[in-house]
Length: 316
Image (cartoon, rainbow, N blue to C red):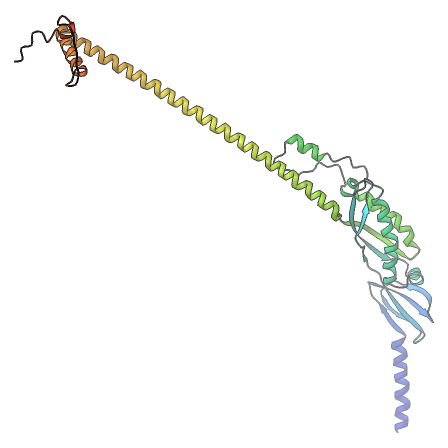
């Protein structure tokens, strides 16, 4: 009985192993190359579904079907106008011929190495062939920037950095067009290449930052000088206004005082005109009071007009 069971179970297990070993699946993000003793056999399987192979003899090699990333190492590259910059690029690629891909680079790691060898020189070739302006800008659009302290004419001159004839997008396209034919023999299609970041090298950065600091100091000094000039102008206007107010006030006071004196003189004249002798007498007494005191000594003739009101004084 035991032998009979074994005779049934063993063939079933072998059949199951053969069945599972001879079936494989491919999903939407994969494509497959079958190999037999290390050599590719049959056509690549690109459509998703269930497939069969010879168990234990044929092996399934999966390759990605969707877009893959390539991120280049940032490098120092001189532009045509001898400006050294750090350039960081990235690309997107995919496997369009898995058979060529398997026969040449074999796997994604090998493909990335080939991309490094092909795209990096293309990037260097195009960056060194154009001035910095072409790599940085895409169009001749006027820059919508504003720098405090700069006149409109100065800003316009700063914005006219040069004429863009090629631009960043065409340079990126040129890099892709140069690299694509070299990648086709590996079954790789280069979908896109972009410049991710541009930056000055450290030595140029210090020079640029120093120039920016100097320009900002110049603008700040311009603000200070304009502020001082405006302050002097305000102070001058204040002094002029104060003098004007003082002058007008003095003029008004003098007019009022003149009118008052004239009115007083008129009143005095009218009052003293009623009795001229009395007016003369009062004025002479005032003169005595102001010129004579106990310490004064005065020798005059008795015929002097100064003592005319004292001649008839009896001391009563």
